[in-house]
Length: 482
Length: 101
Image (cartoon, rainbow over all chains, first blue to last red; front, side):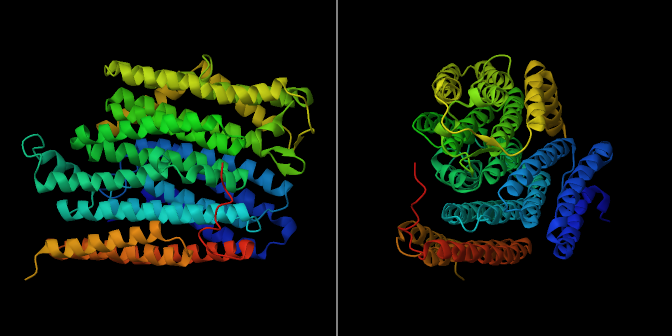
């Protein structure tokens, strides 16, 4: 017997989507905002449902679809982030007169894909979730169809994304051939039953390693880790800023969940092999991200490289393999997403010469025209660097702490040094804001009440890091006990 | 009876050919789409062989899922290429180099 109540959140989203697609056709253009509010309402209702049925959803014992506490915390986080992203998106699209309800609808399809990814306990379901997410992202990137940059970015992302799903599928097919199953649990049992140290040259181990490498390549591509990061700067640069906001935040959470589920649980028997691979990925990401970001003049490109560096830090946490390190990695991911929503959301509200902000020099002298805005931007950038009372500091501290506890001193020194190098390009933006001459005044698309509250919330989270810390502690310990 | 390794070698060769087709191709995006299609077909081949070898239906079912998803994916890919053509009047790979930094 299938109990459909366990997947009720997904059913809410799907039925709301089908309803709003049809409704939107019959709405005159001055009433289009109704469908926007309906989408927001269904997202918030979904959060409410998950929150109020937390323990009930946890009692699901399905081998296919996990709705445990770990998944639900991430789902709530993704849904709330999407509500904020939609707020910024609607403001932006309305200001530039390119508002279309389809943008939101396609994004919600992507949300559905992410929810499936987070909950999947089966490789087939994982593949379908990833594809649903990528297919909607391809079309969202190409949304601004009169822009050459947008369509170019979409083509690049499409080709590389399709290759990476090909790699994922190849890895899955090898795992299926070796273990005869697609279920995470059965693969886990198969791997732990192998005696790895005694027969390291056997066909099973080599085949599993082959599959692991293929899957890791594909996932680090979706994550944006270094040797597979080529698409990130181009796509961030090419698409409109709210799409960049979307791309750089919630898909990363979903991929992080997949990373932690696959590496820390399913492939935990192969820790010896994957920890080295993840360390290489993270070192390359931190190096490439921080060093290339220094030479960027476009702010979206600069933040794209900073994303790569941040991903490197998350992977550094994952590579340690202890529960504390997973907790630190989760803390870092949540921090990264919260901060990135703030910075891109704020930038999406700025207009320079009737276009959205593109270059760092567009921001020059922001302090003399709008001191409050300049202050908000400064707080966010300082949090990225990791200045003590802010959230970014605790995130970096936990990662480095986990590294030191596992006696990995060289890597922790490397992480600290790269943080210092990385602070240069953030500080340069602050210098441009505060000390450069005012060129053209920046306009704001809407009042800053929401952004102001959000950034103050960010500061409070930094003063009380226990809120996020306990959340990560709670969900990670639930993941490993379940 | 042909041993399974032969089938696997064929599918790996097809996979490599499609990868080479994507990375060595310097002319046309349509050819890239064809290579992608070939890549997914080689993976399907893998699944069918393993399913047959293990006497398990899951592999065959997975193939149907892949076929459907890939069809949707190529539809979106062709739509994106049409959008690019409208803006650029060309679908040459060399011409897609405006985004740099």
